[in-house]
Image 1 (cartoon, rainbow, N blue to C red):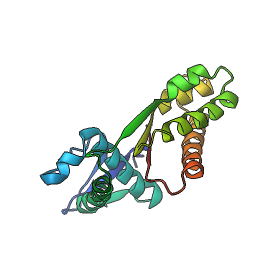
Image 2: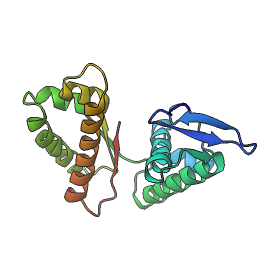
Image 3: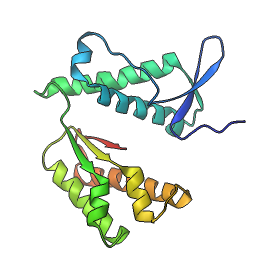
Length: 182
C-alpha cells in the first residue's frame, strides 16, 4: 500500500478507479458572474481548504469529484455572498511573511510567538477579509534548526497553525476574516 502525501486525496471516478490529486494539481475553472469575484490564487486556497476538510476533518482518503465540486461550490458561494455584503468586489487579502518574522526573532520560539501575535493584531487592525501567512515550511525549519522535515517540524507546524487560529478567535471572535497559512 502506498501512503498518500499530506496534501493529497484520492478522487474516485464513476467507474471505481481512483486517482490521487493535490490542490496544486487540480485544474478548477469558474464561469459566470462568480468568476469576477475570485482570482486563481483564491480559488486554489479554497480548494486546499476543501481538500483539508475531507482528508483531515472527515478522515476520508477518497472522495468523488462530484462531492469535492459541490463542497468547493458551497465554499465559494459563501465567499461570494460575503463579498456582496461588502462594497469591495474581491476579498481584501493581507499577507504576512513568516520567514521575516523568524529572522526578526533572534530568541527562537520564545520571541517568535509574541511577534506572531503582534503581527496578527497589526493586520487585523487594517480590517481584512482574509489574512494569509506565507512561508510556514521554511519558517518551521528555521525555528527548529532542521535541514530536513521531521516529526519535530510537523509538531511545530501544527502548533503555529493552532496558535494563529486561537489568536484570531481571541482577537476577533465574530469577525468575518478568513485565515490562510501556507
